[in-house]
Image (cartoon, rainbow, N blue to C red):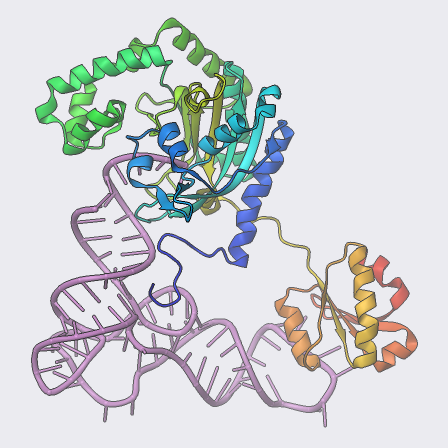
Length: 413
RNA sequence: GCGGCCGUAGCUCAGGUGGUUAGAGCGCCAGAUUGUGAUUCUGGAUGUCGCCGGUUCAAGUCCGGUCGGCCGCCCCA
């Protein structure tokens, strides 16, 4: 621990930034609610086993990025690296939820991954998350993507994002394709990059997305997943595409879009942008029909996504300005006492009031100015005796005497 | 985990080839008739030059390490 610095890859969210942080969550929650999603929360840490099994032992997230520790009871626990596994665990833990299908959930909170930080990547970061459990129909895929698009639109950033879409097929198609791919790449093993050689073991589909020039040449002739999707997978993918088109949501098919977590099937999608550096994925997700059964629950379809709050913050507009306060500036003990009650009365009527209790007149005016106040209410002994206050408008500089009784109506206007 | 760039006041930065008390703008503080801001004027404080060690008579300036930031790879939100 050196000096008083936050841990690498973690950041304080100071008040100015927090407004934008909360703006992203508030907007997302609001849109999700319009679609009938309910908000819930799960613990920030779970048994390590949950993530290892759910996400996949060979994935990067599990094999090298988890914050894992042993607690005093000698249990291996892990700070959650993503939200889906925890929500599915909660579904399995709380049998009651299985009676509420399709279960439509919105959630938000911090995630933790031990990675090298860079722009748009932190060790503690925050996500908004949307999941639908118990809906195997493509309609759920369409809805979930539609919610995402509407949230990005609400934030004013949809036009700077592109929706990329792909199908990873059902397990049967995927297995066949995977086998074909491994055969193909194995025949070109000597020409593959080192990264891709290790991908061949862990996740051969990833080679398709390689940035290595040599790999790209090999990829040009690689067998295409589209040719290996079975009829059911093709129909499903077509239905999703048709639905998005009907909903007026533009997308691009990206055959190289392969998501890193093992549990995905069928639909995979990402909203990406080129405006925030190399980490261009703003929001991504897909279908995971096998996950809940894998965790020991009743076979239940699932689809969802996670969106990076910090990444959205980098793109989005500032939230609407806060209502400007009125500053209450009483001078003297009697006036201060009177002002306390008056301020509460005004606030109860929805007027933002900052009570000032320090300094001379000049200092108070300066402070009011820094607070971006719209007006200052000055109450001294003279005013107190007359039952009035001096109301100074800080924009025009005009000042006039108003009766205390009339203040609320006047300030509400 | 790998490769590259960077680290000077609260913020943005300037400080040729190492040489006396380290600078600017913005911001901050204090004054310009003690019940009136923002504008203007005047004055002031700002810093162990990220940290530790080394080379040197002498280091903000060179070297090594470390911490942190940024960019790329891996991967992802």
